[in-house]
Image 1 (cartoon, helix red, strand yellow):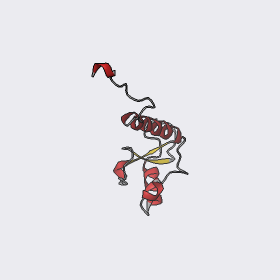
Image 2 (cartoon, helix red, strand yellow):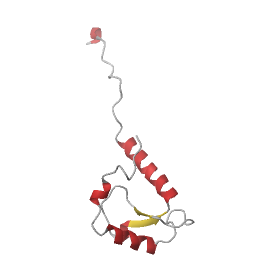
Image 3 (cartoon, helix red, strand yellow):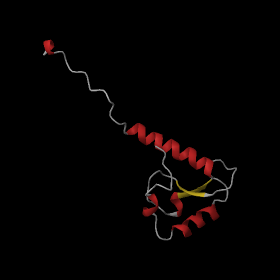
Image 4 (cartoon, one colour):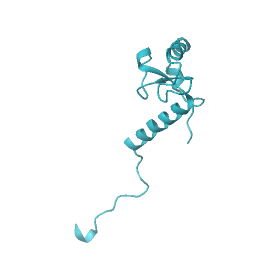
Length: 97
């Protein structure tokens, strides 16, 4: 299932002065901190899924790099907590009990 900012509840956890913080990050990091080529357009949390909104915990990144970074973080989270499979575990043969 696709996940995007439009359906995310993450915005409710942002501080009231987020727009000011975002502007400061993008003013400080005019060029993407990941690729160092494209202009920064997104204020990204360096450590995934944290609510640390200090300037030191944020970086300016471009949209393509942010997509790749977010995708990798989501894949790592899914791998760390896999959903149970559809198959039941094999039961021992009744004659071997």
